[in-house]
Image 1: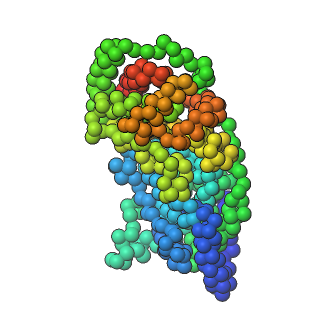
Image 2: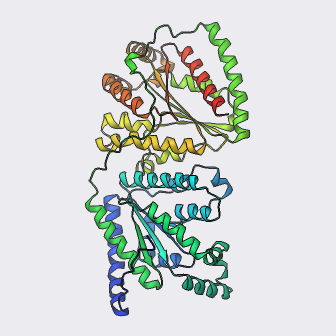
Length: 489
């Protein structure tokens, strides 16, 4: 992109001043429209060292209401951040609806910096590019405006600016070793930047190249691009995003109605014996996971009253309490609802060597949200692929992913509902919503069959726990978790 780029003609000083005053006022108005229309805007600022990103950003935000934007400086990841999934530190900072987030540096600076220093192989670079394209696309498909700016200066201009900064004792701290290395290896960096910009230039999240030879001219370019893009996004806010074809290998799964539940039982003696053995083995494996820094994500979905809570309790009882966390997932809080639906799960991922257990999960998008009308049809149809991509990122990070559907038949659910209703100490477990959901059993079963069919990937398959006998389901869950961890180790 940089090689073919033809710079726009800089206006004369008088014209530039007039256009800049107008653009600043228009951007301030657009910020209020963003707030009113609940449009989340993510602005990524990348470019050469000393290209003036910081000073231009300071000018751009000067006329904005500081209550509705944030600025985050994203330097190279720390050692702790390198142990997290790629893009984790960026995803958790995406803005709420109606607000702007400015990233001073970001995933481009991270990946090109590592690639230039030979810390990424070609294969790793290509894998990161795929992740970045997915990340940007899932944001724009879910209503985000993603603006990406690259601030460009020529080699001589960069050298001149770096020398000027170094000669100023009050500004020399702003020059990093990376900036100096970049200027010394300008042609090599140019080639890598050019390749990256080409690889990640998408219609839904295009690159805007900024001529940064002059600061006011750079500010005008960025401000006018922002105004135009916001106008387009506000006009197109109700447009549906395309449904992408699944490209992941899927595991063939039976429909729920085809899964036999009779005969899947254990005697109390069999249960106690197997429970002790499985919990002992899982306890041993948890220590190995911690030593080898392998994260584990266990996801539970299932029918109401299927026994998820008791199942989770038996798994957790085998674990070191310092190394796991159980996340009960209810309706999203307002600040969660105002972001991408996967955001609240990204923020709950385990540290490496730890275990996260989810009592209900991101699959609510294609079940309760689908059936209760909490999202559009386009939203939940897109979600199958978005979830597969999310789980692929976790797999590439090195995580063990175990997904359970806790299954019972309709008669067993009725018996358990009735028992809860008639037992004072269990009444807290039953709600009017449980009875309403039961009336939609057939609709839920259809949605669950589709969910399992479309998201049982080779790297994150579904495991059905036959739970008419809770004891049987608990042992099967423990054995499955043990098997998956042993396979990884």
